[in-house]
Image (tube, rainbow, N blue to C red; front, side):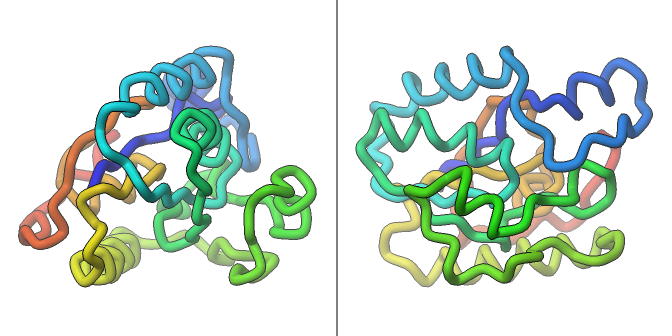
Length: 184
């Protein structure tokens, strides 16, 4: 599968500059983030993608949208690929709001409040990533699936830190990383 980190968000822009949480809930993409999403759509056209899974955070949905349009695919929204809940940006928008903003997507299988009520420890996101790895390894189409996700989730799956708008391949049959460095 291909793991794509969402494009630059308003949170990423401010946090990178100050290393302090700017208090932005469910941030949208910046202009650069939209450009990164469009560039990913162009670059991924030749990758044989037949399925797209995206996190319910707005930044992930905004990143997945141009790719889905370019490939003529639907986006399956799945909270299991969400970010580790640790900052204000990890408070999402309720499904009732997401359904209004994204009427073409199906949110019927997701609770209205789908993010955790409290900070998620590293072991929680690692366990979530392991469950997703197992789920994907059982599917015959894992190799042509794009997953639009987040820094912490991709790190938990691969042990690699990925910058906004970048991607890497992940074979879910390979072992999970033995150790993870959570420095961003």
